[in-house]
Length: 402
Image 1 (cartoon, rainbow, N blue to C red):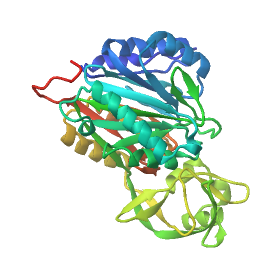
Image 2: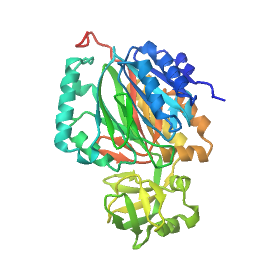
Image 3: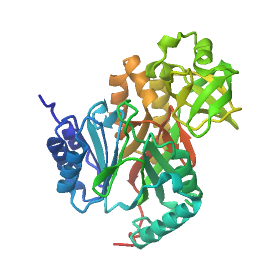
């Protein structure tokens, strides 16, 4: 039996600038209809969605095209969704940005391995020129815009793409997430131009007359043990040795684990981090390999020192961060959230789904569980990263396209 749609949750929140939706129906016809019915009143400049891989993606594409027509729709596959009802799995979540409060430019990047800084310069400058011609902001486009990326989470090209884009962004903040596939680690896809793509990325530039705040935080604190990366497989995100010993065995040693204990949940509960300046950046493990090497979600190089980390309380920390964001932007009308799959594993293990769902509902979060998060030029793990959108800025100036 098909589960009931949850898109009616959008009806309890009335915003002139955004709309939110979700459906737990795995029938693509019903799911697309649920999303459309909830978002249609928004007069959208664009629609963004995140979906589980249980959907027949070709049929879902067909239905989304049928309902949304010429409205730009982008999205990606996920490893869990954040809907208007909070944390969900095996569902679809979505939001729409009103054309009265947002101007959007979107492009598909296919050949990720060949994407260069020059390509990024040409792309970003062209998109900015187009945004200036239809800007809705009360001031310069560069001061009232942000970029958003959705990338194939198994491409191993995230660092290359976001670094090139970030260098071209002229201080415009950049945020995004790596697509998932419900932890099968086989096929992650992004959606643009009416179809799904693998080995690709979607890049958006979003201009707005609303307050917004781009953020990235994690809830982890350093422990005492450290591991030195002594051997890697270059370009593969694989660590072969820690401290000149097989990586998996050393990881088990400092965490008091057995080799047979290693799985995605264990990696989520026992994270590692690299210190850069005053900050600790998490480097999450994806899987253990037959040769006792470890595959990571982020690039990792020989010679770096990794610190064992521990949780400082996911719910309490998330509450504090969201309170801080509200102080910056006022009431949150939409929070586009990129929530690491390892945070979701902690939520599931400690039965935090209800409390985190309540927190996400209260702050109007729409997002998905990622295989990596991006903020400016950094590719991260184990973070809650995103952009919070507040109310429209009060001004006597009219949008340039009015």
